[in-house]
Length: 557
Image 1 (tube, helix red, strand yellow):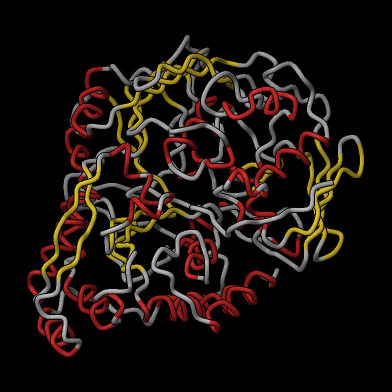
Image 2: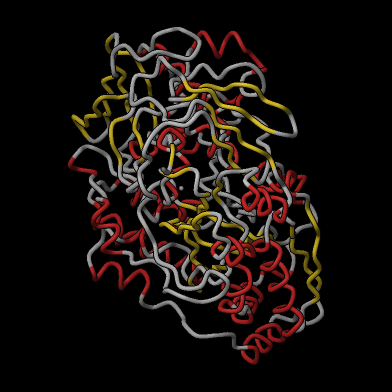
C-alpha cells in the first residue's frame, strides 16, 4: 500500500516556451469526440503563411508496414523518466514506450489502457482492474504491485514529480487483488481519474525501475509496456525506438522510429523537405507556407487544446500592479502576432482557456465563460493612461525569448513593442532552446525575468486543467498569486463530478483569473503535423502526447 506524501504541488500540464478525456464512470462523463468536433469548429480558416486550412481528426490510415521512419524533434529530453514527463519532447517519445492505466484517443476521449476497466463505486473510490498477461519490455509481467509502485513514484518527495499535484487528494493506493488496484481519495476529485490517461498514470516494472536506480530514464531501458521499447540513445543526436514484439495490443506498423534532435527551426524544416526526417509535430510556424507548397508531403492541422500566453513570473516589480498587466494586454497586437508568429494558423483571444475546453457545458455555461471577454485590437491610448496612473512610465521589465521557434521569439518581440508604445522599457533575454525548459523547473533560471512566452495545452478536456495553475502553490504559479476565494473555487470545482455544475464554478475562476491577468492570453493554436509522401497514419490532434501515435504510422502507398 502507498500512502502519498507530497513535498510540493506541481504539474506542468503543458508547456513550451510553451493538457482531454472522460472518466468511464457515468458520474464523471465529460466529452465525446463527436461533441468535441461539433462544439469547437477550431480557428477560422485562412490567413498568413498557412493559407486556407481546416482542422482534421487524423491523417489517412497506413496501407502497410515499413522498416522505419524518422521524426524531427525540437529538443532533446533531459530524461525519459515518466514522473517528470511534462513537456513536448519527453511525451512525444514516451507516449509510444510507456502506457498508462487509461488511454487518450486521437478523438480526445478516454478509453481503457492498461486497466481493462475503471469503476467508481463511491465518490472517493476508484477501482482499476488490470489487463492480464501484459508484458514489460524487460521480460516481466504486469501485476498490481507494479501499478502501486509506479503511481507511488509520483508522490515520492525524492522524485520531485511533475505530476504530484494530481495526487494531492489521494489517501491510499493499494493492491486489492493480483490484477486490481484501488485508489482511495481524501475527498471527491473529478480530475484524478482523467489524469490516469496522462503520464501521471504510467505503469512501469517495479523490478526494472529499481534495477536502474538513479539512472532510470537516462540510460538503459524504461521497463514499460508500450508498442515500442527504448533502443539506442545517441546523446545530442537522436533516440531510437524499436518495435516491441511482445506487445499486448496491435503491433506497430513500423519496425523502428528515429527521433532526431534539431534545435534550429530552419534545420528542422530543411530536414522535412529533404527527407532526412519523414515527419514532425510542432512545425516551425514560419515554415507553414514552404511545407504546404513543397509537394514533398502534407501539412495537417488538428485540435490542439492550446493557448499561447505571456506568463507573468514576477509580481514584486511593476507587474505587481494589475494596471500594468492590463496595459500590456491592451497594447498587444494579437492579430499581428497570429499572422506573423503563428503563420496565420490560430485565433486571437483574450481567454486563458480554449473554446473546446468548455464544449461539455451548456450554451449558457459557454456564454458565461467566454461571452464577456473583450474583443478588438490594441487600445494604446487607454494602455498609456493605465501606465501613467500606475506610475510605471519608464519602468524596466525583462521578457525571455528563444530561437525554439518564431511563436516564442515573435511573441517576446510583440511584448517588447507593446511596452515601448505605452512607456515601458522592456528588454529581451535570450535563452537557448535546450535551456528553455528550465524556466518551468528551476526558480534560479527565472531570476531576473519578469515574463516569458508560454504555450499551454490541456491534458484533459476541462478548463480546470489550466485554471488550477493559479491556485496558491500550484506548479505554474510562478508569480506566487494567492487568493483564498480563488482557492476555494478550485476546491469546489474539483469536488464536483457533474460536468455542467463543475463548469459553472469554473466560469467564476475564468473571470477572476482573466481580470487579474496572471497570464496574458494571446491566441489559440491548433496542432500542426507534417508527413512526407512516404508515411501516413499519425493523429493530427494533441492526443500524441499520451497516445502511442507512432504505432499507427506506416506506409502511405
